[in-house]
Image (cartoon, rainbow, N blue to C red; front, side, top):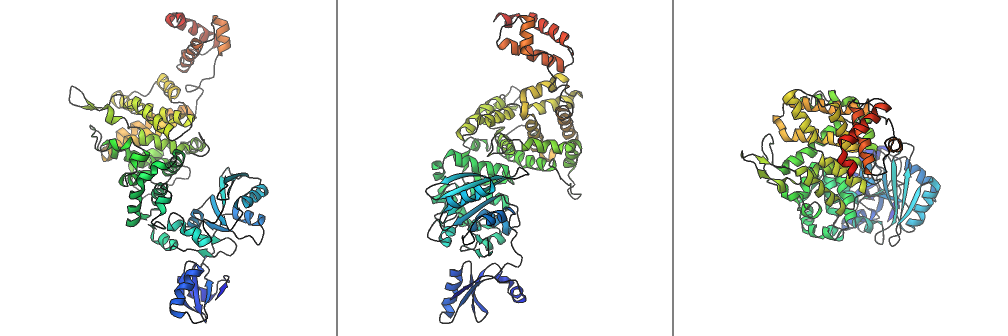
Length: 565
């Protein structure tokens, strides 16, 4: 048997395009068998042509793979004789012509050594990710502030084929020799990718790592894959083992789900697989909890609707959005018309970070998932027989904080989540007032909204829009939607176009000046007086330093109990 490198594409290659990207066994130039690896092609050929002189070659793809440009820089650094295979999700995305910034490589030996070599040459950060498995990680931030993660690991097993077969799903059990573009596909992942099937590599996949259940749901939602029946069965059987997975690993995979495509579909899939009690134990109680009109769904289906509408709203408000004339969605048109001018500001808001490993967008979707989590506990019936959920926002604030702490989220993230859930009814209240009396929010209302919500104000606005659409569904009127958009536009105008007028007026004097002028001792009272002055300034009750001092003195007289305490 001889093993040949791929040649330049010829007319014969084009004629044999069904084998493109595959290994084939040939007898005198005629293809007699094929496979995802040289060994598979040879084994298949020996069954019928074992006594003949077999030649195994790789059939080049009809179109060369489009590798990330960063790969060229890596190849310039490593020795020419270094075997290097790109594996896993990066290969999957290359085959799908999708952009990727995370590159996983495997080598026969020396993963940490090679990773350190690449990091030093590129001026990137380096971490020895796993000493036992000889895995190193390179983190590079390019000029566009995009973060690239490159992992270098040794084979999981004696050779490349064993490594690939030990992976989670067939669509990830793919490898490409980065120099020759030879593809290795021992589990039929390329065919599954083409047919959009998600299939476990083996019946041990989820026993070896139960987190793969969450990853499978994410992949299915992101790529519109259909999880195969046998794989679904294996997932369900392994759900209990998720309890053994660290909170940090579960958190990271859940955040990838929430910031990815179709989070509502993914969450519904988690529910169908029986995963929710393990990862989001508060959520199963939402199912079947009825709500009064104008709600059209129970709390659970309403929550999934909020996720779906939130994703649509963020798409409309993203830079570069082009409305399809065929969409015919009046509500999308109104949203784009009234808030579309703030697309750059929305982009800046979501480019901010509360944690370098998790996005602000995912935090917003987690708050949407939990915004009504306390409704089952606060359900009551008033004297008129109407269902009420009094205080569900306050209790929900405590519940989401508890869940976030269990997921080992940061203090800043927990505060953002609490702020969104605590204030998620405010836009609805302002909209109701506009519908009933025709009155837009006052300067004081605008000031207090952003005082109370802070950096979460934008998230509260976006959640309110999604909540409104999910509440009314097809019964939402143009008038109701337009009124809510008018409220949101007014708030955003003040935040992004003239913040110094109401949202954050420049201070007329600071705490030290206030204490000196009014003979106050340091303490909480100073902050209370400063806050009262800021609000008076926002409402145009004061506009000069002298007026601010006079207002502060009057406030102290009127609030003598605060001074005495």
